[in-house]
Image (cartoon, rainbow over all chains, first blue to last red; front, top):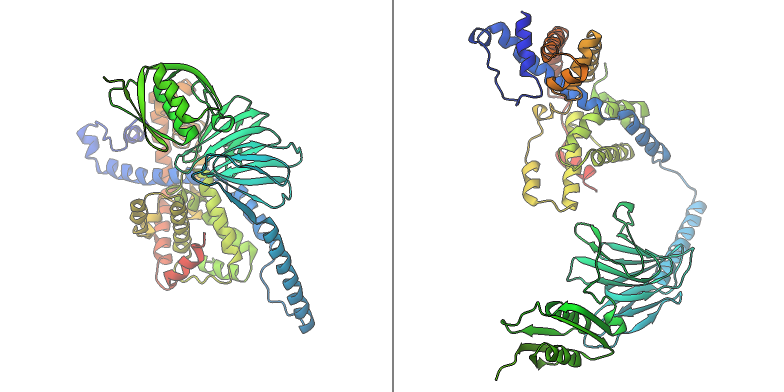
Amino acid sequence: MSEIWKHIARTYDRDNAPDEIHQLPAEVKNDPHFREALEDSKQNLQNIDLFFQLKSVNTEAAWEKVNQQTSRKAPQRMVRIGKLLRVAAAVLLLLATGFLVRQVLENSPVKYVTADNDYSHPRITLPDGSTVTLNHGSTIRYPKHFKGSTREVVLKGEAFFEVVTKPDMSFIVKTKKTAIRVLGTSFNVMAYDSTETVQVYVKTGRVEVSDEHLADHHKLTLLPGELGTFHSKTLQVNKISLEHQNPLAWYSNELTFEFTTLGEVIATLEHVYHVYIETAPDIDLRQQITATFKRQNPDYIVEVVTLALDLRFTKTSANTYFIQPVTE
Amino acid sequence: MKTDHDIFLLIREGNKEAFERLFKTYYAPLVLFARTFLADRDESEEMVQGFFVKLWEDRTKIDINISVKSYLFRAIRNRCLNHLKHEKIKQEYQTAIQNLPLSEKSLEPFFMELGLMEKIEKSIAALPPRRKEIFLLSREKGLKYREIAELLNISVKTVETQMGQALKELREQLKAFRHLMIGFLLITSKPGIRVVPPSVVNTSTQQH
């Protein structure tokens, strides 16, 4: 009899695949007592496994929470109020509404949009004295007055911020899915709608990048010279190397290339000057160039680059270039 | 003995003890159930807690005519589906589960009558200490016999013998109870307790 139970026990070893039928002697397999005991045990173990799963849920702790939350509010009850009281309540409500409307109006954001075909970069002074320089096609929204413990602005596109230090009032830049929190520093934020990453480059001070809810686990702290990226879909934060980037070029109008490939030079010029540079198919984009440009226009830079690499370019429209090999 | 439905009537009148009793009966099963839709245990627990808070706040408005159990599981399922909608999870997945019927049978993997819970607890507690230890390592902790043998420094054969004896004893203990359980289920699943139009259930649970 105990042999039967040993066989049944073996069937329920966690080492076994659930449907694995144990190689049992035929006389055991066909024994009706065995089959019945096996069937009962299967049922029992299903119940017992569920029992352990249910027990692993801490119902008492959960009840504590729910009990607290349901005790706070008194059950809804009809309250009878006299006429006078009702009038007073109405007046109070009106006052409150007026106050709210005023609050909303005062906090309503001022919208600022840069002109799309304008290469100048408007510099805006915020109510606290901080400045924002907007790149081409970017928008910033901010309130008339900063109130409370934060100074919050909303950015679409790219901007360079120089934030006045206020230890008791952190400055927060919100972009799609991202919040950048600082106390006082200068930094660049790139958050175009067309890309899924938000890039933050720190010039001075210390900057915290996180998701829009300022959750700690998605937080990244950046120091001067560091560039952080925040992926708006995956909420992943990364620091990336700066070797081939000119994160502030659009703002400072200074470009530095050190053994930078032509492909990267083109990508940088396109981003900084909002131009399109096409190349002939036989151009090797891996050839490198080292050069520094200060306050130059894109025409000049493209000319210098092509000359240095023994190529030529034609300007096909106001902001498009075509680079091709020198041909006779 | 009070049925779930009686408890619900008490809750409508604002009886907090009845609410506590309902919560303690269904909380763990509903968490396990929500867990089949949601990413993790914490999320499932928050979801079910939020539901009970809302249930208490709206208690006077909710009119339950189906069995309380069906109502609770259906409400949680709706909440989970709405949550998934917010998270933009694939449409096909949603429609697939929306169409799943919520029969007594389909709730079996999540719900257990309190009486059976207690009986199982007692039956396991009644096993001799060594046997109980081995049984818990296998079923509660999910260890393989080989691992249990190593851990306790005994042979796999000994583990098998002890497990066999444990299963045998549990069968004896739970045998009588299982017949009771079947009778109990037959009584409570009789019609008459159920009435509610599903639309009531939906409006009260799909607000989030």
